[in-house]
Length: 148
Image (cartoon, rainbow, N blue to C red):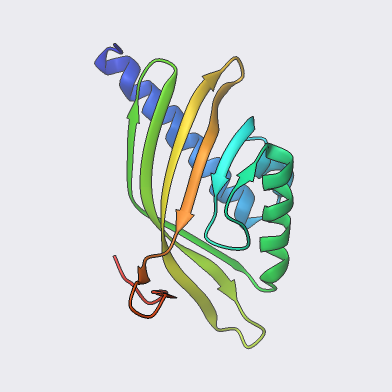
């Protein structure tokens, strides 16, 4: 079990990793984003496929996602929660993601994100990630207007 100081340190390291992820994403730097994942990452994203296995497949997905958004990217995090142990950690947050369109209008929606990390020799790496939007089971449509 981690001491309170080591738990705080692990959480600070993970927060820094997530901030680096966000900054790399906003710069459209897929290589910097993917450097924060473990090679064997398994990810469930809200669009295109049911799952992605491995950093190469997930990196191609992020390239495709960024190509869909011509304007300035948006990524806002709220309610970040992290629970860390010696070698593994998990957490969740709400995020508003999207981009500005060619008319300068921001097109974004709130998503739910959960993640798992494992400590490697080079530091914490994301081993699991899940982005999703709530949906209305009666209509089958995603609720892109949901608010935190």
